[in-house]
Image (cartoon, rainbow, N blue to C red; front, side, top):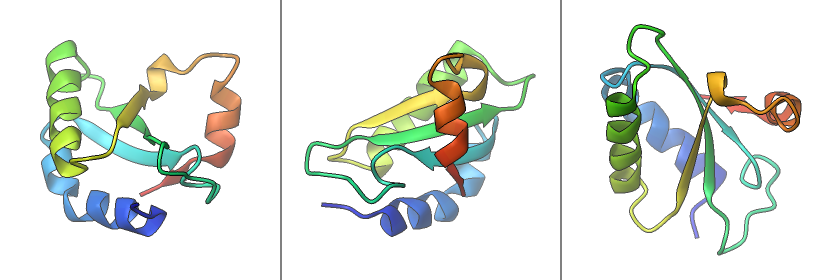
Amino acid sequence: MITKDYILTAIRKHRSDLSKFGVQSVGLFGSYVRNEQTSKSDIDLLIDFDPEKENFDNYMALCDYLDLLFQNEKVEIVTKNGLSPHIGPAILKEVQYV
């Protein structure tokens, strides 16, 4: 099972690649931030896109890239603009930006 440090290090190492998709910032939230992950946990990432590059194609390309980066792990992406008013505040409270 991977660790929070592994995820954060991988994102840091691939920062320049992520920027090609218009990613301005990446934050980890959920079970990995709380150190409550299990073998069934997914990687929850909060993504903030450059407004001029936030589109479906970049979103899907980023999803594909992260699936390759974290090969055997499920990655869930939430955009800052797509945060629910109900759960968004909890995510913003615990998110750890890379």
